[in-house]
Length: 331
Image (tube, rainbow, N blue to C red; front, side, top):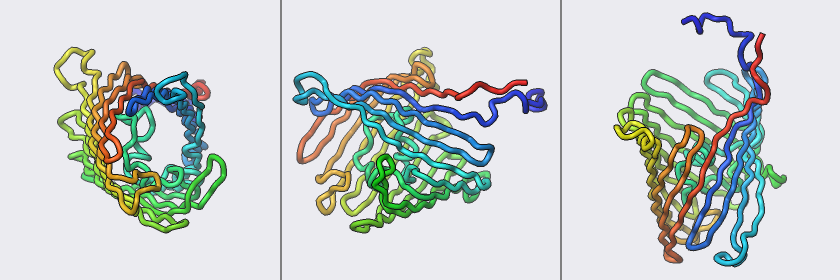
């Protein structure tokens, strides 16, 4: 109560710019071909008072392979990309207006789970590119917010329009679409869907449906998504279980097990970022949280297709950081 009553207006961080994000490393072996992938993903947050926020995320990803895939020295380069650079205006509790380059709100994976410090399995789902042409981002405007919030449920929405752009680091396709979901408070269950109209070259419709569930009684996280486009459709289902509630030694409670199954069915020859043939894959992951912001990651997957069956191994680490650009203000 004393902390709530205290006048802390002169003893807080205020609207301080922050650099956050993560660094990580993934050692990948896919069908016998080894790839080394160091990464750093800084996120810049610059608030202007209580209603405006400038935010941007940049990726620096190294991609190194042996010269002859399985023999010779490792060679490669570091790729840089701007995932988004946007200005958000908090109009009220129901509306946030965004302009600039923003992540397309299509499905649950790309916008919420894609960063290396969040995703439980480092390889993205097979059908992840559906709805994300050409860069996974839009250039234009987006409206989003909470349509209604009740004790038992919350409804959220987003709507956007993107212009076509070939400008370096601002690549985007001409698209329009939206996303909506309902979150049921007591079962902690979210049900949602996305629709997009691709408006350049061959105009096509893309659609997605997803579910996210964290049961209140057990430390389980279940997510699933189905995607459809002209060149194919597919689904993935992922579960993660944390050991932190088990009656076992504290060191073992830091483990997390992950499983994912997925299938993709090619249509009209595939293409546009998805496989040209039917593909299915199973993954199992085991992660260990040394600290809340530092974890060791590992996974094994098996991919099946008419073209090739392959084993996929990943091992590495991720570290999440948060750094205010100046210290808190004190009187």
